[in-house]
Length: 461
Image (cartoon, rainbow, N blue to C red; front, top):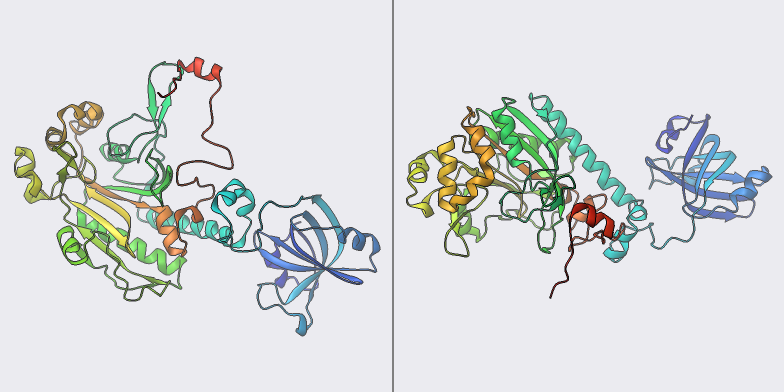
């Protein structure tokens, strides 16, 4: 039975079977040392000339070959201990060796942190790039983050619900990715920009406490640290208010950091809170970086931004929403919303959570009454209510008051892992302009595929 490399320190004197990748081979005359690694770490294998068949086979090994060995775990001599690795006090004297697969010369080096390698090359060979210890650690830490979140929310009676990926195109701020329907030519699904509408419908359905580690899609222009597909922690609660949502998320963030990233220090608890107007006046941004020392990579300065304006002027001189059309106004502004007056003064029951100068989450208490939703659309564009008819119909069936929030999980992970961008914490990211260099996507579709979908391509003039 296979033993993980990290477990050999508990098996001194025992016969173990290990499998993994060759990192380095070192020949010393009648003895060969191999550094072997698997998902748990690395260790030193020893091959001696007395076992001629195994020794000769070991002499052919090269970096990144995949092998399986068996041998006895021995304690290293004191002078040979390697304090840099977990198993540095032990080694395995090999008596059997099986070569499972050979590797040719690799197109990129994987024995460094990878920052010095051009990103396009790294993304083209991402399956190799992910072998480096830094990226492997990032994915494992991200797993620990989502596992903690699931446990935290599950203990508080939230249920995780998957919402559809194929949905309807609706005006929500960004461009939708459209998916043509083969069975209904000329009609299209859209990939969800977020589960916003579905999670509100789950509140109408009476589930009361929902969350999801959700995939989201936005067809945006190239914008630095963005991806066309990304991951949110999405949650919604019925019969709640702004203070309860903020308190729950502050506790979740605090406990997450203390449990998964104990080396980090949260600068201030409770998190400081600023109105949008205060933040803009004092810091010139609604994403202030409040760290007392920006040289300390383990210092986390969270804050809340509240009291956002509900509407802002659009390019055509009309009104548009600042966050999304489903937010509720603060109670004292409901009358103005329903009457459509003093629009620029209406504040929304919206809240953003900011970390070290970056927004990592945003949410709101929602409009749950149909007349309030209709009032929003009468202000921004009366025709848009038709795109959300299903929401209006749901609200007239008895919708509870509700609210929630969504975190940018990729961004939070990159900050907590001290990475320069979100691509370093995503297994298979795309370039800034949305290309998948490893799979060579997007790519052209065949003529028969297009014909079956009833699509004809025309060249741009």
